[in-house]
Image (cartoon, rainbow, N blue to C red; front, top):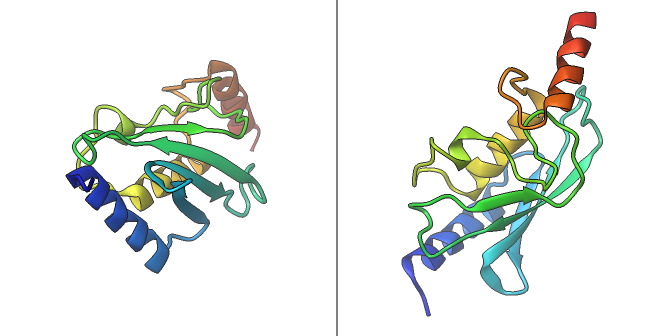
Length: 137
C-alpha cells in the first residue's frame, strides 16, 4: 500500500542517497520505510570528533505533516539529549514543518551536537559541564 507518507519517505530516501549531507547516512530498516536507522559522524575539532552516533527515526502516516520520533541508540551525554535518547530540538517539536526531510532532520541534529544551547537543556548536568568548559576556554 502506497500512502502519501510512504511516497514522501521514498523521495527522502532517494534524495539522501543521491546527495547525502557530509557525515550523515540513513536508510529504512528491514524493508519498513516507516522505521529508519541513521548514523551521524561527529564533526572534526568538536568533543564528538571521530564519533559514530546511531539513531532511529520512527515515522507515522501523518509524515510529513507531523515529525518523526527520533532517538539516539548510542548513549549520549549532551545538553539536548535526554537519558532515553530522545532529542530536544525545535524542528522535532514546535517548529516542525513539511519542508523538513530526513536529510534536514539529520543535518539539524548534527549541528545541534556541535553547537548546543546550554541555557535550554534536556540534560542539565551535561549543560553545566558544557558551560564550565566554555568559560575555561
